[in-house]
Image 1 (cartoon, rainbow, N blue to C red):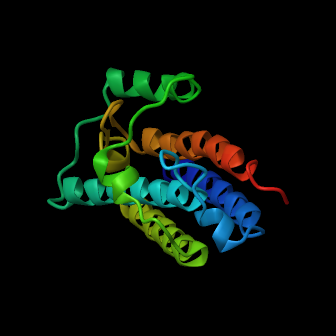
Image 2 (image 1 turned 45 degrees about the horizontal axis):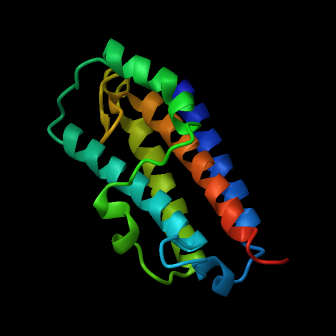
Length: 179
């Protein structure tokens, strides 16, 4: 189980590395520019992604803090995880929870500070997940506000697809500026 988790962690880390490398070519000014009052800047998208991951990690730590083994991933959890790609490729938007949405996102952020925090957070996630038992990793330790409970596989699949979906938004935002 841990080898599978390690492989998934490598995949999400590689996705983050590619995103950071690509965005590092742009100025802080452009990354913080909002195309309109109702749209997020690229940096707000990046902060949103980092915070979404941060709160899932905090939830897992709280859920497992007492040493209990969570119930094994249910059929519903497995089903939801299997249809994530369909849900993330749907043409409609899903409003993010208030804690990681519009007003909660800073107007201006430092790309390198946020990137450093995100990479550190990912390193802590890796250490934490690989310290868990197989029973804990197979249990419902992740809870999405819409999709429900899932195991670590569902969590890491969510990270990949969530970032991929927002990369489309980032591409659109960057297309407003000429480089």
